[in-house]
Image (cartoon, rainbow, N blue to C red):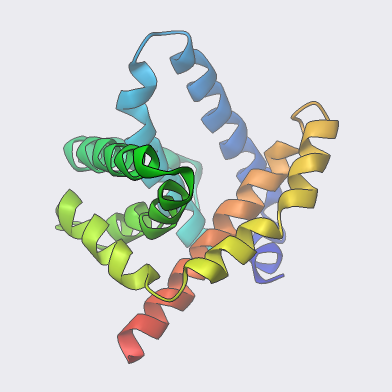
Length: 183
């Protein structure tokens, strides 16, 4: 509910940015290995964009590209998160899923701290997620109906669903960050 309030009156901007985000990944998927190089910067850009909505700031379209200003950090972060998740998944699927929850806040942490190193951001995400993985699972579970609806609309619905999911995750990050600071 809080995410929808944050998006209220700004859905056009959110949908437009999501459309561009999808188009960039569609083009990148046609070029071998290029998505490896853009996934980190785009993830940071969407984190910055979503946090601007979440914190009632001034979101703007250009924010989705801000991750490219910190290309090295985002590239290494993205590759490490993928590698660590893959290694945990090799053990069994469940540890891989749990690991992906542990690393879920990495790009939000990078968005908040310009000087943080990739390994520090991943470590901090793991720390912040201790005791909050179930909450994130439940948050994701709430979107299953929306995801089915997005599929039934041949993907068009995802232009609205994805911003809602991203801003919800940004709100979750701010809540967990506040809980971590007070502990």
